Length: 21
Image (tube, rainbow, N blue to C red):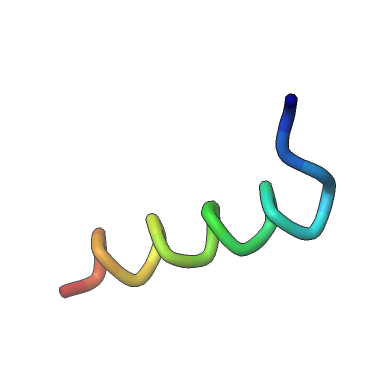
């Protein structure tokens, strides 16, 4: 079970937000 492109993109976006804040 591996994350899809959408899931990977969402996780990357969340990681970016966490890095900003």
